[in-house]
Every structure is written in C-alpha cells, then in structure tokens.
Image (cartoon, rainbow, N blue to C red; front, top):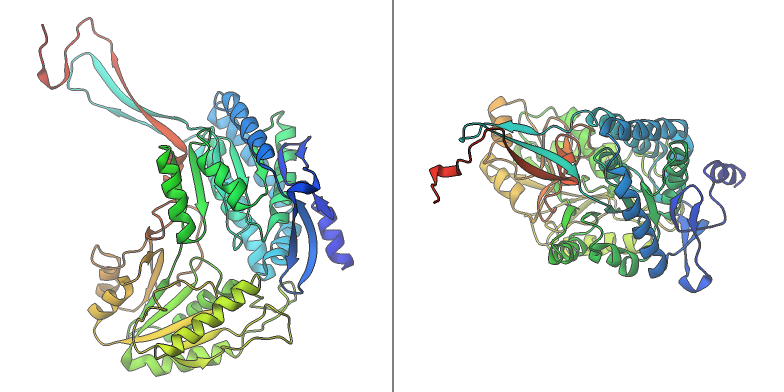
Length: 510
C-alpha cells in the first residue's frame, strides 16, 4: 500500500479529487450533493481514491472556458501549437512509469500494456508535432481565366472526447494531440471506472499549459454519462464529439449529435476474427491468437474473438492453443510475470459467464477455461476457448471478456463469408503463406473491416495508420493518416485576379 500511495502522490492524486478542470489553477470541486465516484483496483477490489462528480453547472462552466480558449488558440500558428504538444509528449515521457502503473492499477491491464498505452500517448504527440507543419490544402485548376481555386483547413472548435475504460488515457491522447495542433480545444469526459487516470493526465496537461501561458486547451470533466456525457453530446458549442464505447450508446450519440448538425467520430464494437488457412505457420498464428484473445483480459475492442480455421488443421490448432493457454500466468496486474489481469468489475464477470452459457446452449463445446479464479480475487477468470458448430447468435455479439470461439471452414470462400457475417467491422487478420489468398483477403471482396492484417493478429494499433472500423463499429478514424481532417473545417476559395467576371459552366447572364 505504501508503494501505491507514493505512486498516487507522484501523480498528484489525493484521497478525494476535484473532477473538473480547465487549467493549472482552475480545478472545480462541487459539494457533496453531486456525489463521488470511487476508483477500485480490480486486482484487489480495494479503493484507490475518489473523484467528485461534476454537476451540470460545472460542465457548462468547463465548456464555456473551452469555447473562450478556442477563440485565441485558433489564431496561434499551427507550428507554435505543435510546440505545446511536443512539450506534452515530453511531460508524458517523464511520467511514463507512474502513469503506466496507474493505468494497470485502475483498469487491470498488465504493467507492460499499461506502459505501452502511455507510449501510445507519446507517439501520437510526436506524430502531431510533425503534422502541425503539414495541414495541407490543395490548389485546383479553374475553368475560368484569371482565377485561382484552392482549399484550406481551419480549426473547428471545442472537441468533446468521451473515452472508454479499457484504454483510459491513450484514446484521449489520440484525439487531444491532433485536435490541439489543428487549433481546437478539448473537453474530456473519462470513463467512470477509471477517473483517476483522467485526473492524473489533466495535472500533466495543466503544467504544460501553464508553461505556455495558456489555459482551456485541455479540460477535464468527470461525471455521469447520463448527465455530463449527455450535456456534451447535445451542446451546440461542441461541434465534434469523439465517442468510444458500446454500439448501443454510440447509436444514441450519433443520433443526438446529428440532430444538431454536429459531427461525431465513433469507435464502437469489435468482433474480430482471424482466418487460419491450411498453409498457415501455426506457431506464429498461435502466438498472435493468444495475445489477441488473452491480452487485456479480452477487453480490447481489437481483441480476437473468433477463429475461422480450415477443418483439416482445426484439431492441431486447438491443441496448440490449449497448451498455450495453460501457460498464461494470471494474477495481479502489476506483479512480475503476469500476462493476464482481472476483468474490470463484476458486471464484466457476469456478462462473460452469461455468454458462455448462451454458447453452450447454442451447441458450443467448452475446450478450456470457463471458470472463475476466486483464489486470486473477485474479478479474475480463466481465459476460455469454445468450439462452435456454426457462427450462432452469441458469436455475432461482442462480449468484452477472454472468450475465443473456434469454428471450422472447408473452402476459403466460406471463411470469407463467415468472417464478414457479423454486424461489427473493426479488425481482422489472416494467417497464410499464399500470396493469392492474402491478397484476396485484402481486396474489395475480402475483409470488410477497417483494419485487415496478414500474418499478424487483430489486437493493437500502431500510430501512423488511421484507426477505426466499418458497420456497427461506427466508421470513425483516429490517430494516423489523414484523421486530422475530422478535427477541422474545409473551405474552398476562388480568387479572381483578372478584371473580368466570367461565370462557371460557361453561363452568361445579362
């Protein structure tokens, strides 16, 4: 406990923390009438601290401060905005170890994954700094003599970021770093199971903002989704909402934001499959599958949930997976050697075992796992493999837990059909030595997902490529490539440098 207390002190986390901030000296603490959210260490079930929930008035105050800051921030040259983001990345480098440990403490992912998540924050800051000098528009040929056409990109406004518990800091950074260099301000509502991560990151951001003599570029508002989240979604002062979470809530967010003609970036459910062809390198495939299915206790949107294996090698692959699963150390997320920590809370445990019972009722055969590890704590489970006779209803649903469904196929065309026959479309992969089969998987008639990999698993995202998926995954793109365009408004300009006024399309008037 002394080590945890020292860690929290290093991150400026108190027993009770204010839940809203717009800058260094701008922390807003409500009275007890708003309530508090208690952060629980899922490895032990013990409380880490609490955060005061923001009231409606506090939320409005934060949005107003963000909108005011935007009016001056948009005037700062983009490379200068990049300097602030560069310093944010350096501040995160300095705090990588304690912040990564806090991610593990509060969410339950192992230490390597917690530190890796902070590295993602650092990497996106580096990416954004370069981007600050590359917010390119186009020059276009005009059909009218003496005219020039071009497009340029302008800052959009305050951006609302509503993140999920499974990546309690990285998703904020994906949005915040890009939005900031684009000239936007950011209002962050972190997930309620991981509020201390939000408070810790805000302290870091506040110090960076203070060094640059600004405030309101990065703001925090911890509160209930039904109150704070809903106010952000419906606030016309927030032209863009980035939401990461369930498909059901994402559908509501999309409808509410569209209803006021705002924009949304949606990162929703994933039900990711790996096709294992008869010529696959099974040793390579096994390692990828185990990390994809077991990493973060199956609580990634990119977690591997379905295996479609050619029937001739199905038994061999399953035997390899069972042997690998037996060697996965389960335990405290921060303990050396642990490869799988706990689920985040009891509802997650309940959902896992409800899904297992549904799978069994639909003809599934449990190969391994399907048990709780109460000897380790209330939220620990065994990773589970279930062989299914077909892609039944439960298989088509996303369960945020370490459940791996294995199904067989005969012809590759059958595998592709089965692969795409789910509502989600986030991440996908194939293991094969056949160039033709790999290229078909990547073609227009292949995977219908936003991410499609060859001889690498479904889980994980590398900064530089745009992250996101199709269908009920929401269609949003974050992090890399030209995802920055979502945070800006496009403007087309025509300049007439002649002394004539020709009309487009050859129209004559008068």
